[in-house]
Amino acid sequence: MAYPTAVNNQITDAVTQSNVKVIAEGPAFAMGSMFQASAHSTGILFENAIAAQQQQNTLAQAAANQGVMQIYTVDTTAAAGATEKIAQTGVSDNLSSLMTVLKSFKSSPNPYGP
Picture 1 (cartoon, rainbow, N blue to C red):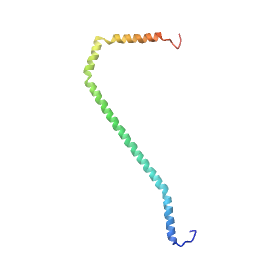
Picture 2: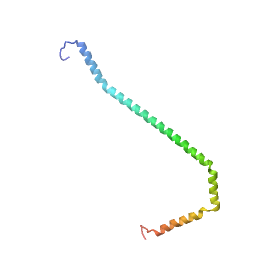
Picture 3: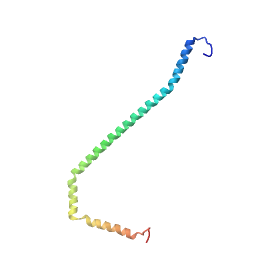
């Protein structure tokens, strides 16, 4: 003790020790708060990941449902495709579009040479 006071020495020592204890525990409480905040953030991260997985699962189910619906309508699509193959109605359209593309290449100037 530095200065003599009218208060009992045991009381001043107890107050000093409690103040030292509070100051010494500060870093530990701060680290505890940081760890708790980190654990909370990690928990939210996992919650968001699970929510995203659930949404992906819902999308996958919807896509599978659409695929099944298309499979059930394959009769009309297959009939249309078979009709086109038998009648060969698309061949002339394909040839004319190919000819148009080839003509456009021939008429355009070549930037790389003669």
